Image (cartoon, rainbow, N blue to C red; front, side, top):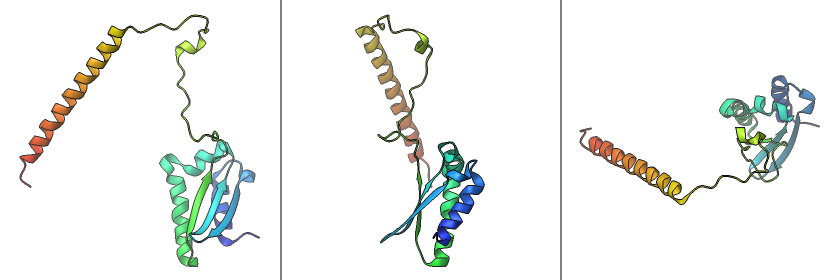
Length: 144
């Protein structure tokens, strides 16, 4: 038997996703309120979450409104079944060197090249710091 909050979230999510049969909602109640764990097909996860989390935030806002009506506190957790077990990790960017076989040894970098790169980075940091100090001094002179 599903409660009104489960049916509510299920209706919203099933109308958004491409595979409505894969939508599952598990409901648990504890001292902090009601936790709804939403599981969808991996290809529909982006549709539910939306750009910058706008979809998930909209569902949570609607749940908050339902919570005020029912005198309950709802939390929505969107479960990612497709995530690696160690947490989130960015995929390695593909480069043109991926097609080359690993029979050759990688090129070595000389000490002079590393020192030159480090000196350039330090100069950039120093110039940015000087620019920031100048901008802060200009702001101090303003009468607000």
